[in-house]
Length: 196
Image 1 (cartoon, rainbow, N blue to C red):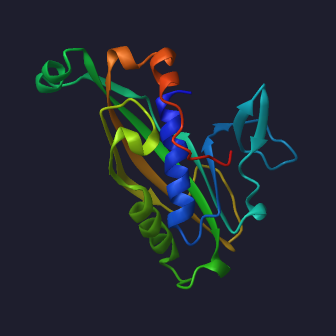
Image 2: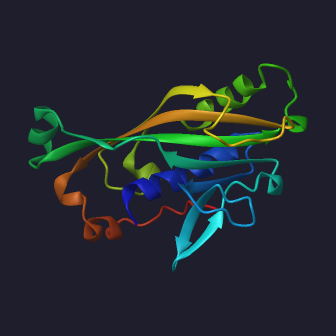
């Protein structure tokens, strides 16, 4: 399992535990063919199987991730390279969290309900983390919010749902020799599980 997948598992566990509204969190979704007229986005769960993530009636509040733009790469600064005696790279994953919550579940259901949802999510998952928090080999992990909005592309939803779309940057500093699956497989999950 790669480091981004492992981190998203951990972030999703924090999201569900730290949010009053979000009851189910999926991994990284892609735009898919319409399955039963509901699957605008799907996640792969292994062995070629996929499940829709846009069947919002199933949960009080749900969330899924999409890649926002290209992953950014840069060679890390000299201090990090000297201290580790290895090539070190900075990865920045621009990720978008798409959430929906039934308005009836939000105590402050008014024209700023999206702000209440966004603030609770940002509070529960943003920050700086140690590699051991997610069971990965990255030296530094930072999850920083960038912006949020109340709509997502062409996803048309009833007014009974609040849509909150938050852009985050996942920043990781990784030694080159820890990018392979061999290195990652030594450090498996720290017990955090993800509901697809």
